Image (cartoon, rainbow, N blue to C red):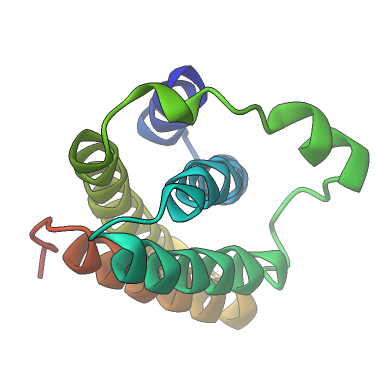
Length: 144
């Protein structure tokens, strides 16, 4: 879960709209890796992880449309994704991802409040809603 912890730290420390969007985009990418590992395991939480994967991908795609998101290259994302998410039990992984989703929802909602561009506001709000949904799917408590 080192990549998830690193992504969380970036989201927590991001200052300014472009930095928040970039950190959130990266966090969603890392979450997809962890979710895929959990889906491959099957088990009782399979449906929650499948639905979470869809919501995380939707959040990432919403951010991709934000005008202030620094542009990333596909090669950069391939280098960032690493499979260190298989080391935690399913329940622990769900808790870590729910917590990160809650943080993402809060930071993206705050970013939307300060976005001057309508495209940034819409992208941030959509991504924040998807993140809150992931939090609830994985057993967390989304913030209002």
